Structure formats: structure tokens, C-alpha cells
Length: 328
Image 1 (spheres, rainbow, N blue to C red):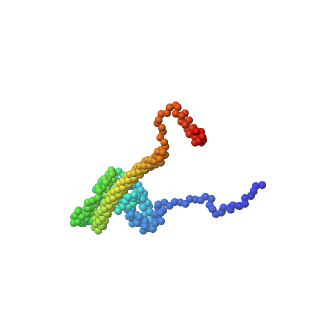
Image 2 (cartoon, rainbow, N blue to C red; image 1 turned 180 degrees about the vertical axis):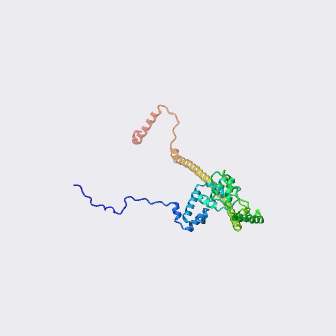
Image 3 (cartoon, rainbow, N blue to C red; image 1 turned 120 degrees about the horizontal axis):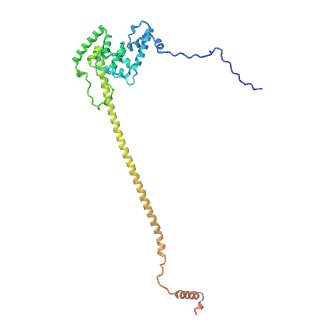
């Protein structure tokens, strides 16, 4: 008979399903669809879309999702080329989406100096329909065809005003002061540097007050960055000098300690030699009185009969002392 268990297990609840279905993941479109309309329109404007052109929220969500897919397929180096052409410094470690948001804010229609790959990326972000085999002139024509008549007139007006302001202010007022620090390192092969935009181009792109404010801000940022580089170079020089001095002090300290060890070693050797000499002299001085009282050995020659005579005389002397009648 088998032993029954002491504890009984409770039966599973009857309301559990036979198979637990996994929770469905939410896609990007569903996440955008949950956003409020005003926030969704703000995201669309950041990506270069015109939110008022879309009638309902679903179409706007679909357009934003397609624009994100387009940005993900763009070349990051081409986006950096566009920013350098516009005189803007990209942020270190920026993603393609962040670079694209900055590129969308560029409104300049002067494409001189822009690489072909940058021109193609700019055309895609501005909404041009491209097939992929367009030439540079065709890309420029496609970009200019997107500009309306009134937009072109406003741009020409701002350009004329910017030309007058630049002539009135002069080129020397917009130039950076010469650097007093070390020379800047050369750029690597294939690396570009942000182009310095003229004041006329900035006013033509952003307007009078915005253009002047942007120029002042960029000049101030450039000046601050230049001074920070100089301060960093000075700090590096000071740290190198401190390291050099510490190395010299360390070498001197090691040399002094080695010299002290040598002196200590020689002093120990000299003390040992003096102690050995002192011990030797002490032993010799103690043995000197006993050696002085010891009789010197006889150097006189004796015959073969002398021991016999000496023995007889000695015996006679002893007998006389013991028995005085013996002498008689």
C-alpha cells in the first residue's frame, strides 16, 4: 500500500485561457496616432512637412512616418555636407534625424559650393520627386521650381537689403580676430569645414533682424570656442610642464637616496674594519704581560756528562738539607 501525500495541491482556476496570447507591439504609426493633433503638427513642421496640406490626422501620421523612413535611408555624410555648406556645425554624435531637422531649417537658394550628394539630399527633404539619375542642373531646377513667385520676390527683397547692409557694415566688421594660440591641426582627407556665410546670404535666408542676430550669435560662438581652445592649449602646456618638473624632482630624489645608500654602505664597511682592528689590538695587548714574564730559553752548550754531575750535586744538596750529618 503506497503512502498518501500529506498535502494536496489546489486545482487551477477555471477562468484561465488555454493559451496566453502575446501582447501586440505598437508600431511607430500607432504611437504617432496617440499624440495630440497640435503636437503631431509640430513634429511634421520639424520634418519639413506642411501640416495644413493634410486634411485629417491619419494622412498626417502617414506622412510623418514616410518622412522618418526617408530620413533613415539618407546618407549621414551628405547631411553633414549640407550643414557645412550652410555654415552650420553639426553636433557631435548627432543622429540622422537630428541632422535632417537642421537641414530642413535651411532656406537658402544659393547652391554654389554644395556637393552633388548634398544637393540630392536637400532636394529630397524639400519634397522634390526624384528618380535617381538626375544631373546637378536638373536638381537645381527642381529645387527652384518649388519656390513660389511671392517667396522668390521676398527672397530677392531680403537679398537686396542684405547687400546694402553688408556694404554699409563692411567685411572687416564680420571677420574673426586672429588667433593668438597654437596653429589648428589640418583636416583629414575627406573632412570638410563649415563654410562662412556672407551677411547678405544670412539676411536673404532669414530676414534682416534674424540674419544679423544669427551672425552675431555665430561670431560670438566662434570667438568663445576659439578662446576656449586657447585656454585648453595653455592648460595642456602647464600640465606638461608640471609633469616635466615632477619627473625632474623624482629623478633627483632617487639620485639622492642612492647617494645616501652608498654613504651608509661605505660607513658600515669602515666601521667593520675599525672594529676588526680594535679587536685584534685588544687581544694582543692582553697577551703581552704573560709573554714578558716567561724565562728566556738557555743558549749555552752542555756536554754529555753535565746532566749526570748536575743530578749528583742536586741529590747531595737535598740530602744535606734533610740530614745535616750526611755532609760530615
